Length: 403
Image 1 (cartoon, rainbow, N blue to C red):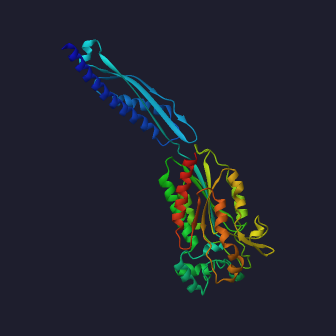
Image 2 (cartoon, helix red, strand yellow):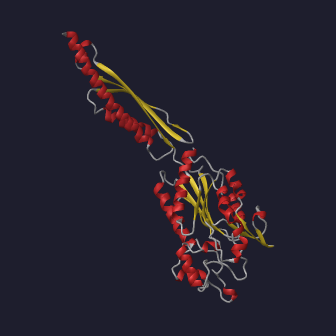
Image 3 (cartoon, rainbow, N blue to C red):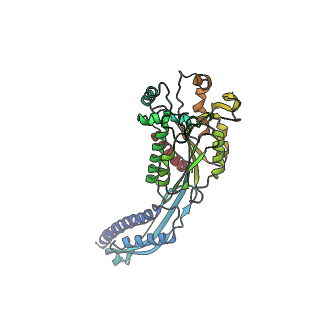
């Protein structure tokens, strides 16, 4: 009967040992996860001490258990992931087995966890505020704008500051103010809303303090590229500056060539440093977000001179040249583009002569400039805000995937 009794006792003690191990393993998993889930890209020595304290506190609740060692592993990080491991040894008292000179049974266990590194990202917003962004935002708005103006779908080229030199100040009778007085929403107004929504989403999705920073520019011709807000970790400053996104003024006798991509992006190339690793705030990954209708209308020479039309000696109109983006891409700056599709106006002679011949090239040219997966076209009446939020989420996801 003694062998049977000892075998039964050993089975009972082995069961107690396994139950204790399950509790200790769960305690170790919890301690490791509590550290690895902290919103930081590094693990401090105090966090490792806290991990051990948490484990030992939970282990003390398991009857008969004595922790004999706890070994926190050295955190391992690279540009993509952060890993942490820990192990323990312990004993649990026996009952009947102690009669056979086996007073304790040994237990050991280990746990590890790996997660993606949080990425610091700087976003540069380059927003086209040339007259073509004065297009009414939806098909209904276009129709209403034509009624209000006697046929014009744009509140542009007439946003005047000096009414033919006769007054100084903002003319209240130009088409821009016609749109405002008739509650006709313009693309430029939708763009303001999109920027505000972008800020809200960025704030809501940050895992680290000041993980995302932003800078905002508008551009039209080479002399009026404007930095509305310098790079800031306080994204509410971008939102506060959004109401300043407005159609560029057209002065009396001023040329209409007010969309100069090459000079605007050249300025951004000198402004935006090369992308970093994204692991620290001082070495962020950098994105340029460009919102535009994609039609170059500028003075002087351009890269793709043969793609469009030299209307006058000082005016060229044509599709955007993808080579404009090469300098930024060479610095690993990632480019996201929202193409506010150029509305075909086939009852307009200027459009038919100077835009219609290459209208099918506008979108593909912008797509070639954009980094992979970061091109979003928005048709007339489409949701620019939804496109902006999709661009943001795709950009952040692309950082995790590529790393």
